[in-house]
Amino acid sequence: MTTEELLRKFDDLFGHGNEPQIFFAPGRVNLIGEHIDYNGGCVLPAALEIGITALVRPNSSSIVEMKSLYTKGIVSIDLNNKIEALENDWGNYPKGVIAYLLKENRKLKGCSILFYTTLPAGSGLSSSAALEVLTAFLMLKIAGEKIHPVEIALLCQRVENEFINVSCGIMDQFSVAMGKENCALLLNCQSLDCQYIPLQLNEYTLVIMNTNKKRELASSKYNERKNECDAALNELQNHYPISTLCEAELYQVELHIIDETLKKRARHVISENARVKQSMEALKNNDLKKFGTLLTASHLSLQNDYEVSGFELDTIVSESLKIESCIGARMTGAGFGGCAIALVESSSVEEFKEKVSAVYYNKTSIIPAFYESKIGDGVRELSFDMTVKS
Ligand code: GLA
Image (tube, rainbow, N blue to C red; front, side):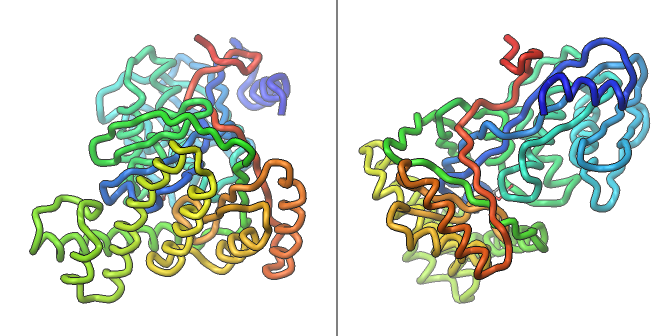
C-alpha cells in the first residue's frame, strides 16, 4: 500500500485534519539462540525490513482511538480511565503498553492511530513485539517524552509478561527497538550487552519460510517450557552457585537432573547457547557451511529435546535440507508453527522455493510463503516519502 493510499484511508476513518506522523517498527528473525533469552544466554537476532507502520494524529482529548487495517472496529481508550484487557484482542498489546507508560507517569496525548502491517501475525517474526514497541515509541514521541530504546524494550517485555501473560524473554522487544541495517545483534540477555555483527552471507541468501501453520496453544506451551527451565535451574542450584541455566555444563545436567523431561530441556538450552558462540566463530571466519550445520543442529535440538517444533516445521526444514543448495535450516522464534529459516545459495533461491513449496504442500496440504526481507533498522519515525526522519 502506498503512503497516499494509507493517508486516504486514515482520513476516511478519522476525518480530515493535520497530516498524520508516520512511524515504523520491524519484525525480527532469530538466526540462532532459541529459547535462550529467558535462560540468561546469548542470542543472535536481526531486525527485518518488513514490519508495522502506524499513522498518528494527536487530538486535543484524552482519547486514544486505534484501528488496524485488518480488523473491524476501533479500539478506544481514555487515558484518564483504568485500561483493561479483553479476551483475544489485538488491541491488548497497544493498550497494555499505554497502561504501563501511564503507570510510569509518562505524560501521554490522545490521538488517532492507524496500523498497517507487512508482517504476518503469529508467524514467529515478532509481530506482537513490533506492535508493542511501535506503540510505546510513537506515544512517547508525540508527547515529546524522551526515553532510551532499551527502556522501551524492557517496558514492552513487562507488558507481555504481566498484561498479556506470556513469560517471554527480552530478545524480541530488544531487536525491534535496537535493530541495525545489515547487522545481527549479539545480545547477552543477562547483561543486555549488545554487539552489532555485520551479516556477510557471501554467496548465500537467508530465506524465511512461513509454514502458514496457525500456532496453537503457543503461549501456554511457551510458559510451560519456561517453568520447566526454572525447575531444572532449581535442581542445579542445589549443587552449583549458578544464577541462570546457561551457566550450567552438560555433565552437571546428566549428573544431577533425574527427571527425563527436565534433562532434555536443560540439554537444549546449554547446547544451544554453545551453538551461538560457535556460530559467532564461524561467521567471524567466514565459514558459512559451518554456520549452516549449526542452524540444522539447533533445529534438531528444538525438535527432540525442547519439543517446540511440530509436523509442519519439521517437514519444511527436512525438505529444505534435501536440496543441495541449502546448507542449513531451522525453525525460528517460539515454535509450535510459524516460520523457519534456510541458508541457500543465492543463485538457486527461486528453484529452492519452488521445490520446497511443492513437496511441503504435498505433505501438509498447506501452501507456504517465502520472504527474502533484508536486515533493517529498529523502530523509527518516517517522513512522508517513507525515509527516516532525522
Ligand atoms: C518468543 C519470545 C522470545 C524468545 C523466543 C524463543 O519469540 O517472545 O522472548 O523466547 O520465543 O527464542
